[in-house]
Image 1 (cartoon, rainbow, N blue to C red):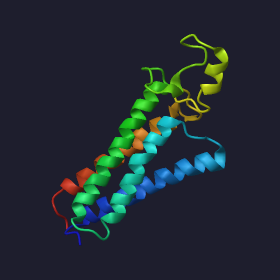
Image 2: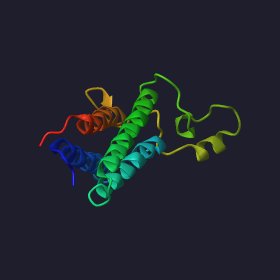
Image 3: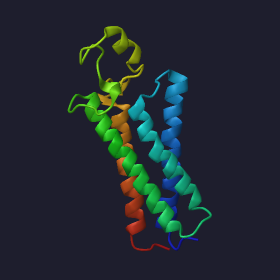
Image 4: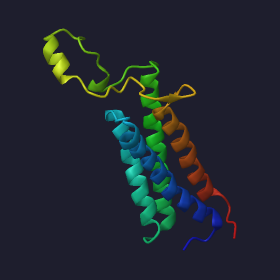
Length: 158
């Protein structure tokens, strides 16, 4: 059992935040047809880990450790989101084949078309106020992960 209310809040945030973000990702995918690119999947993996770590903290000691690791995993997802958003906004080039336009690099045009990714990583399929889903993942995940770690670092409140 946690010794403070701050730790309990951190634990709940470590469970609810990745669950909500993954839920939103699946709703956007299956409800609105916004299918994930390769880098979108990269952002989901740390949330899967964070959710598992957060749930583990409910039953496996040391609880603070699992919550802290969940917070770090959430921050990692946010940092991947920042990198992905930068690719979408054209701030830097991507490192995956899902950002290569068809026809670049010479060779057979038909092979380039057939091997091109269906969902490109360098095009934001949806934005709100000029911010893509990857950008929102950066903002929410990084802020939420830092909040978890800050709650764990606070002095004990009964």
